[in-house]
Amino acid sequence: MTIIDMYESIATKAPEEELVDSIAQTVSITTSRASFSYGIFEVEQLDVNLVAKKFFSKASQDTGILPPVTRWISRDMTHIMVERPPFMVTVKYVDIHGDHAEESDRCDECYSNDLDECQCGWEDENRQLFRAEYTLNVPWTLWFFELDKDLNHISSCQAYSRPTMVTSMDDMLYSLPLPNIYEDAKICWGDVLYNTSRTSYASLGAYLLDAINGFWTGWFNNDLTYLTADIMLPYDARGRCDTADSYLSEWAKMSMEDVMSENFSQEVRTVGQHCKSLNLYGNVPQVAVNKNTLSRFFKEIVS
Amino acid sequence: MKINLSIHDSDNTVDGYFKSGPGSPSIPLAKRNCEDIYKSMVNLDRKDLGLLPPAVRWISDNQRIAVFERPPTVQFVEIAFDKKDNINSNTSVQSFSLPIPWTIYYVLFDDYNNPVTVRVYCRNEPLYSWSDRVYMLPMLNLYYDSTLCNPIFENFEPCETFADGIHAAYNMVWNSGWNLDLSDTIEYSMRIGIPSAISSGTSIKNHLNFFKSWEKLSLLNVLETRWSDPKRNTSGGDFEIETTFKNTLDAFVNDAGQNSGMDIREAMVKIVNSFSVA
Image 1: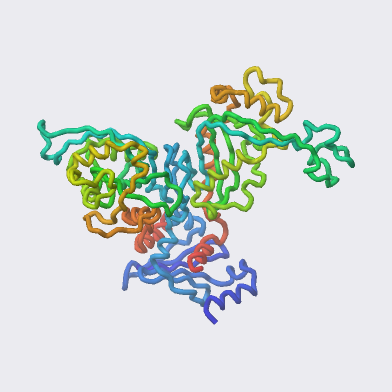
Image 2: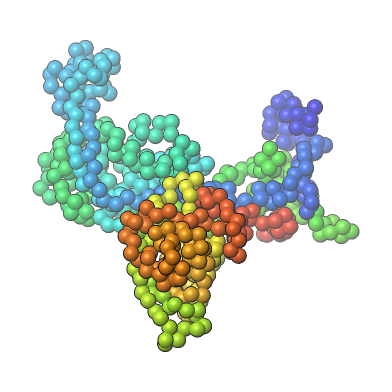
């Protein structure tokens, strides 16, 4: 039985907290040798250079190749701001709440025309859902990605718009008034990010840009329309939009100049204010400091 | 030097002793809270880099090294065709508008955002993955290993932000003046005839013809050009490394001494010091 096996066998008999309390732990480091012991068990000798590297690793958080339009990265490197230039996109829309339902589109059982409300199992394909495509001019957009601590998965993303490229932290963020975005600018991804991770892409940059593309190529619907109140639309379109599709229809009539106007959407906060809030949140140490952190830290070194 | 630490999970503290050498007395280390020791030993103090210029493609964890990329462009260069010390009013000065492909810059910064070392490579398309290959840019002021010979500016303007540092690095490459003091990569290019559109042909074997040939190319032409692999050493030997982005970046990080943070002696001193911090 190896030393580690012995330790493991003890560990399986007692909860870890009890074991930690009952066995003294010592660390011995010289310039040629390092070891970590649990009570009488010296686990193993360690490569001292490895110990130095693990103690003071400065290269543990590798972002990989960033998207070419990365404009800001948080201190802990888990929040990345990506900027995209204005462009024209054709979005797909489906009315899942029956804004356009005819009598014949209603469920025979509950008479609902709302996919979410109807619990009768009426198949989606039986309904004559209103579908449409709208070609929109889109201003500058900013995407604040939050990644997990391993930088492998997108935890969340907030999307904003801007009339110009960001040139200062004092520049204002504006809402991106589209369906599938919550009031706090977080994106509802649907199944766009399902089963995706950085490891399946050539780089982090490719992963993030693909997520953005997924947002634009996925289906918009009238399930989440916090930001599509017609007050967002300027000019004479206001007051004419009572459904998400009529809103998109009005947007589709807008020129690139219209959408690049500062009146296009609502001011939220400055870029700097937003980044600062993410830094405050993101400045939590990578390994949460709590009881037994140091001993766990040494255990990680030997494991 | 020897350090012995004892971790007491019952009260979440750590103490111990250290000996500075054989025969030295053991010096006890005051009992400290484990969390405090952990925080003082582990680097948690990255700074906010502020607004980044577009096309920063990689930043090292310690924020001392960055890679940025620039799209194809036509660069106006004015070259004095002699060594700097020999330049006088009779020296031939020629200007060229050179179509430049995608360029990639590896930059080591000091603690104050000032670029210290810059290495320049080129590609025919933007970076996409670690395994993308990078190529030698046959340009003046670059050593064989594509490291820039740092210019000496009369007025040194410190960089206030990380973005300033990126701009400064770019300016060091393209706006610091051109002469024939250092033309390693061009001579190598002429020697092996790559890129052929610029370097091959019997009349090419001088710098003037090299740039004249280059100037005749369009931006589209240079993006279809085969560039030579970069060299690993500065002396001009023929040893070459695998030329992927990852490998060249690893080499740069290694050459910059930024790969392992610190050696064991430094680490031990930091451990001991962390006990003395109030």
